[in-house]
Length: 267
Image (cartoon, rainbow, N blue to C red; front, side):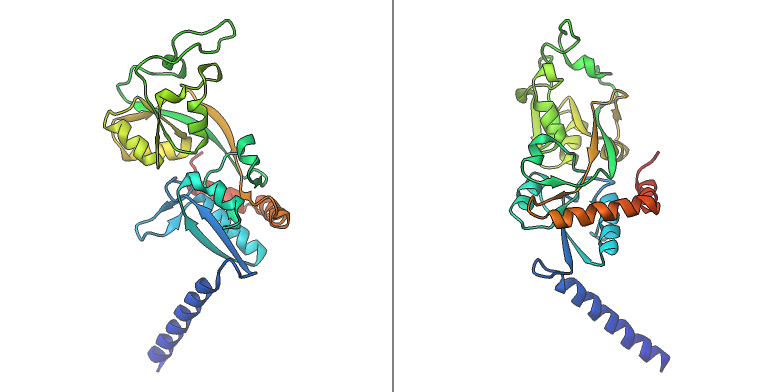
C-alpha cells in the first residue's frame, strides 16, 4: 500500500510541477520571465541534462524566491537581449551584463551584483604577452597610435568585449577592421585554438572555463577592462526594478549572494 501511495504522490507532484511551469507565462502576475544567453560559463550554461544553470541562474532563483514568484528562463542570442527587454517580451535579463551608456539608452539596470574583468586569451606560444604588444607605437600620453597589422581579435557579437575591441586605438581598441565577431564566445575561442585568429577578448570567468576546455591557450596577466554586472529591465517597469534591487540588498545582507558567488567563481 505504501508503494502505491508513494507512486500516486509522485505522479501528483510531477503534474503539479508541470502545471506550475506551464502556468508561468507573460500574462501571469506571479511569473517572472528571465532572458539569458546560456553560453557564458560559469554565469549561465547548459549542464549534462541540457538544463540552464550557473551563477546568474541561482541569483535569479533567489530573487524570485524573495519576491514569492515563479521563475521561467529562456535563452536567446546575446545580441538580442536588450532589444527584447526594450520591447517588453521578457521581464528582465541576466547574462553577465555590463552597464554602459549605450545599453542604458535601451533599458534600466539594477544595482551591481558582481564585478568582472575583460581578459585576453592567446595561444601559449603567442608573441603577444601583454596588451601593449598589440599596438604599433604610442603617443606622448601613452595611448596607442595604431593596431599592429595582420592581427585579428575574436569577440562575441554584441558584448562589451566587442565594443571595446572595435574602438579606435586611442581608446585601446583594435579598430573594427581587425575584429572578427562570433555568435558565441566559445566559437571565438575555438577559432583561436585552431589558429584562425590572434586573440580573444572575453570576460575573465568564461575565459577560465574555455582555457580549461581548449588546450594550448592561456590568459594574459594584463586585464583588458574592469566591469560591473547588473540586471536589465524595461524602462517602464520601475516597480520591478525596485523589487529586484530590494531583493539583491537582502541577498547581500543574509550572505546568500556571497554563497552563490563562492560556488561558481573562484577567489
